[in-house]
Length: 355
Image 1: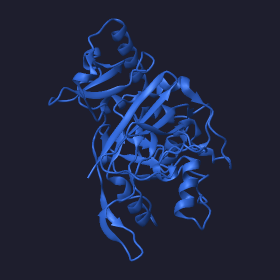
Image 2: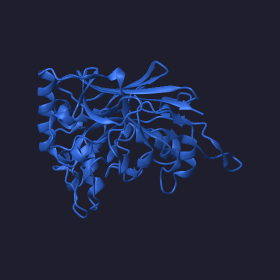
Image 3: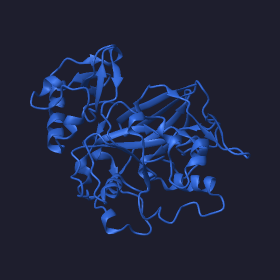
Image 4: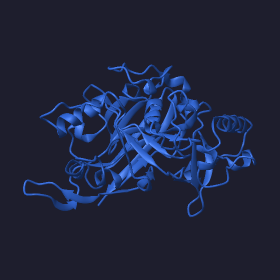
């Protein structure tokens, strides 16, 4: 539920009007701008707030709770449209599920070991396309590209359109260029979490991904849930991460519990087809951010980092159609991903395929 222990942030608008920032409580939105004139809360995106860091975030969260308890005027969500709550400068997608990486390795490289030698030593990832990240509810147009056949590639719409069930985090203040973020400091740079559907054209992807990895098969659209759940709200749902073998290098070692106990589900046209949990990820978000910046690259407020597909070990816990061995998406299909941590919901991210 969207109770006082949750209070996620987003951007909303009345139809045809500019967006404004809000916190969600139950099925209503609380405007943020009137709460504190000293905070940058009047714009259409959260980036200026994200730049201020954890002390400012905690103070605003307290003000939001106090305003709701004092009976502040709330706007019903059925009167509003959801907008993308952040201006995303960079988007990184990881490959952090052992089960997913193993399953796809067997499919894409059937004559070799499913995991490449580096996989257990570092969080594998790639730099995605920030401009095509869209808010939940945005229609997903079927992409075109080169399709491999026995006689060479042809060009046309993908015939193997898939989903990827992921959890993403949004960064805050960031770091100076040339200064890595450690695993210990990583939580201070993470504002909150969203659900992510990294739509994937598997035939285009399979033809292009060697030797440099995902490109057009991924960059046409990535959907995120409209409400960003603060990391602070998820503190009670941190659990021990799974064991890592071999032990990670020193810069990837963590102290404390950083796996997130978040139940996830995939719904296709009203039918639940998969359920899993984010706690099974092999690489945790502090390790992901530490690895992404270990070479000194800089992080900026509003950057998006996604976990990669989250799959479990049992049948019906896979986070993509290719692993579930289901038919790929047809025009008109609607996919909805949901997440819940105890009584706290991350909401949902949905998209309908159009020709």
